[in-house]
Length: 97
Figure 1 (cartoon, rainbow, N blue to C red):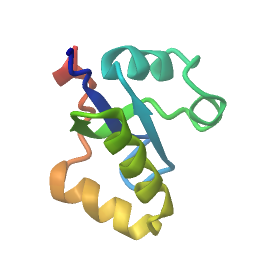
Figure 2 (cartoon, rainbow, N blue to C red):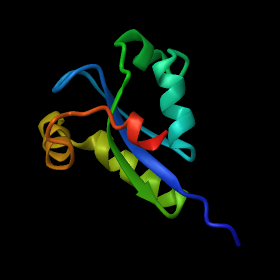
Figure 3 (cartoon, rainbow, N blue to C red):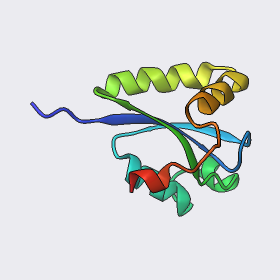
């Protein structure tokens, strides 16, 4: 049985800017699509091109549950999570390609 990794991730346009929470089984491909403006209407509208958080999950069901939880979080909680893991709001895309 092949274990397929899955990811929850957060995109933004600048530190403490607009946040987008998503899920994917191919983080590199999905973020690349967002950066090219074809990933989602929301990301294109707000020019969300910076990957600031990525969490790996062993099962897609876990990623889906985490995405739902993150989307239900208050904005300040998401900002705190990002700043705990990526205090400089660096674009993590360069680390995954």
